Structure formats: C-alpha cells, structure tokens
Amino acid sequence: MSELTTKFQSLTIAKEAVNLSKEQLALTAQWDSLLKSGQIEQNLDKINLSLRDSSFLASTLQPTVTDVSMFEAVFPIAKQLVTSTKDIKNVYSKYRHIFRWVDFLQQLLAVPSKDQLVLNYDLDLPREVIEKKKKKTDDNKKSDAENTAASSSSVPAESGKKSGKQPRGKPDEETLKRLREEAKAKKAAKKAANAAKQAAEKKEVEPPKPSVIDFRVGFIQKAIKHPDADSLYVSTIDVGDVEGPRTVCSGLVKHFPLEAMQERYVVVVCNLKPVNMRGIKSTAMVLCGSNDSKVEFVEPPAGSKAGDKVFFEGYGDDEPLKQLNPKKKIWEALQPHFTTNQDLEVIFKDDENKDKPVLKLTNAKGESFKVATIVDAQVR
Image: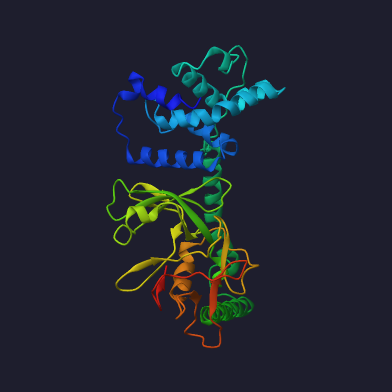
C-alpha cells in the first residue's frame, strides 16, 4: 500500500491541474494534520460526515493526493470493521459513505483483488436520516397569534378592574376613597422599584478571575499563509482536544517568518468565541508578548506537551469557562493585567488593587512561562 500515492500520481486524472480554493486548502491542511496525529479510527464519524456532503475529502470534483493518503490509513480499519463484526448491517449503515469512497479508490488504484475490501451491495440498508431544523407549522403560528391576542386583550380588562367602572354621574365617597388608596399604593410601589434599580446599578460588580480563561500548551503542526489576507497565518494547532487539532488565524506575518511558525510549542487561548477571518474560521488565539517595536511568543517550559493546562498561580484547581461571552467583555477586563516582570516571566498584575499579589503564569509542575527579551510587555 506504500506505493499508492506514486501510482495515483501516474494516473491521467492526477496529472490534471486542480486549483484549490482557500476553503479547500484549509480542508487539506486539516486532513493532513489528522493523518499526522494518527487518530483516524477516533475520527471515522467525522470522515464519514464529510464524505456524505462531498465526493472527496477536499470538496473537489475528483480525488486528490489527500484522498489517497487518507485511503491508506482508513482502508485497513474499514476491512477490520467488516470482518470482525456480527452486526454487519449496522456497520454498513453507519459508515456507508466511507465504504463507497473506499470502493471507488481501490478500483481506481487497482488494488489487487486478493487485498480488496469486498462489499455486499445486496444488503437492504435503512434510509439515512438527516436532521433538519424544524420550521414553525401553521398550527404553531396560529397558537402564537392567539396567545398574543389574548395577552393584548387582557390589558384593558385588568385596567377596568383597577379603575372600577362607575355609573354615570359623580362617584360616591367609598369609591373615591378606594381610588385614592390604589393611586397612593401604585405611586409607592413605583418609588420602591426605582430605588431598587438604582441600588442594583450602584452595586459594585466583582471583577472576573483569571481562571475563567482556558490557557493551554499548543503544538503548531503546520502553518501556511492565509490565501486571502497578507498579514495572516493559518495554523493547525494541537491543543489536546479529542476532536483533533484546531485551525487558528494569527496576524503574525510581519513579526515571524513562515519557518518560525512550523512545529513549535506555544501558549494558546482556547475559549474565545470562534471568528471568521477572511473566510476561514479561527477557533483559538496564540499568546504573545509585545512592545512598540517587536512581538515575541510566550514560550512553554521544556518538556511541555500539547494540551497541558496553563494557569495563574493559585487557580490550578479552577475550571475555565467553556466559552467567554463577548458581550460581558471578560477578556477585555482581564487582558490589560497580563504583562512580564524583570525575569521575563508572564504575570497577572492588578495595578488598581495594590493589596492583591502578583501571580505568575505556570503549570502543574510550578514552572514559569516567559518571553525572550521584553520586560513590561503587553501579553495578548
């Protein structure tokens, strides 16, 4: 099977020029990273889902080298699934798109008959169910309209009860007394509500703790220049997720050559809200220190591994938020306190509260994280 890529490149179909779009280039980088990680079997569902929507892995109209490389890794797993299970119909149903893709490539690459995966196309498989977002039915819309109408109609009815419908002519003394008491009570309730609102607005909000940020050691497996943005790199970074590496866009082209972005350890912020950067979704951020003249990576200590938890002293047992809410400005509140000391260590320093201690960025071993040369750096 090791000669399949060479065999594929000799085919006429492989010689035809394939101009990949920026999305297809990003997909290719992600599949290459998954291959390098060796976590193919754990990601079969992801591969099958991709092949459900596209004939080939890079969403191309014909196979690419990425398909062949992935085929070499998936092929023995597919054979094992077919030969080792008793519930063959369930396996065929679960991975039907992978089997279709495998069968096409083994024929295209002329895999010897004795080595091929033999598939039973006579099995009666259940229809594949693809969940779609439910639309509001006419009955639901009608119910909503009825509820709105009922709510609207209740207002004047309640107002009538409060004001009391009086017969024509001057109200009697008892009615006038009741109306005065109701108006007085209403005024007192409004005054109390305003006072409570003002008290809540004046109440000091406790600032967020730095432990809410999910810092981790990351390993840049591969970085390329963004196909549609001169200032951005697109990196594939392993941060220890079970789902595999993340795609991260970083505005570091002016500060580091592409060679400096390859196969290195960095510190990554993993719970910022994902953002689209010129058509590519970025799901994390590389942490750097900077001043007016230069930018430097925050360097993990020797022996660090992808996915290692990174935290400020005293917060090692706290769990970070799954995702920072951008509306609450949590990152914006905490980031100005990140800097470096005279020993170039990354620290959390609250200048507004001198009583609070300075906290070092550390790991489970108590090791510090540093920049190369910048003292009093902005760390972000």
